[in-house]
Length: 243
Ligand code: BJW
Ligand code: ZN
Image 1 (cartoon, rainbow, N blue to C red):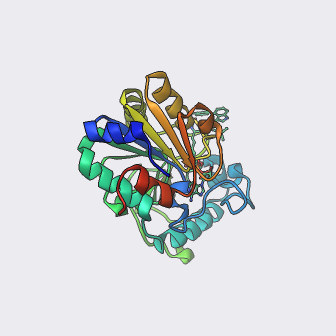
Image 2: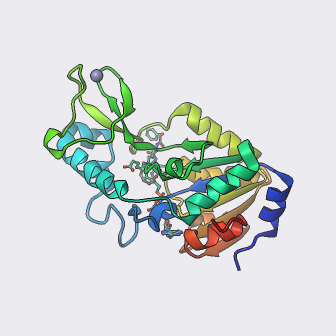
C-alpha cells in the first residue's frame, strides 16, 4: 500500500516538499530511460554522444540521435505520475519544488509550473557562435546539423557530461533540497552528479526522504522509505491524488 504518514502529514500542513525526478518518471509515457537493458545508451557509450567534444567532432551524428529522441518524445504524453505532481502543486503552490533531470518537457505538458530543469530541455537549442537560444520543435533530418542565422552551429539545449549545470537553477535546487521537510525521489538511478547529491543534502538537513523506483539504487540506501513499484502506480497514491 503506497502510503507515507510523514508525507501526508507534510502535505496536510503545507510544508515544503521537493520532488526529484529522473527518467523512470517518464518511462510509462514511453520515453526510454538512459541506463539498463532498454536504456538509450545500451548501444553507445555516453561519451560518444552526450559530450561537447563528441558534438564538435561529429555534430550530424549527435543531432541524428537527438532528432530520433525528439521524434519519440513527440508522441508521448504525461502519465499519472506527472499529473499527480501537478495536482500536488495545485494544493501546495510554491511549497512544492519539482527538480527534474528529464529533458522531455513532459512536466511542462502536465501543467507543473514550479519546475527546475537541471539538465535542460530537448526542445531548446542554442547557437555556439552568437549564443542565441530558444525553442525549436521541428528540425528536418535533411538540415542536420542546424545552423543559426549568424552561420554558427546550433546545439541542443541540454547539459552534457563535463558541463556545468545552469548556476541559478542548480543553486535553487540545492536551496530547496536543504529547506524541504520531505523529498520524494522518483525514477532515477542516482549516479549522475551533482544531482545525485540532493537527497543527501535533504537528509542532512533533516528531511524525510522517500525513494520510488523499480529497483534499489544508491538513493534507496539513504532513504527513510522505499517503494519498489512503477511511478505511475505509486506516485498518485503517495500524493493522495488519483488523477
Ligand atoms: C522506474 C521506472 C518506472 C524505470 N517507475 N522507476 C565521479 C564522481 C562524481 C561525479 C563525476 C565523476 N566523474 C564524472 C563526474 C561528473 C559527471 C557524473 O556524474 N558522472 C557520473 C556518471 C560518474 N557529471 C557531470 O559531468 C555533470 N556536470 C558536472 O559535474 O559539472 C561539473 C564538472 C565540470 C567539468 C568536469 C567535471 C565536472 C553533468 C551531468 C549531465 C548529465 N546529462 C545527461 C544527459 C542530458 C542530455 C540528454 O538527455 O541527452 O542527463 S546524462 C543522463 O543521466 C541524463 C539524465 O538526466 C541523467 C540521470 O539519469 P536518470 O534520470 O537517473 O536515468 P537512468 O536511466 O539512469 O535511471 C532511470 C531509473 O528509473 C532507473 O533506476 C530505473 O530502475 C528507474 N525506472 N522505469 C519508477 N516505471
Ligand atoms: Zn548564432
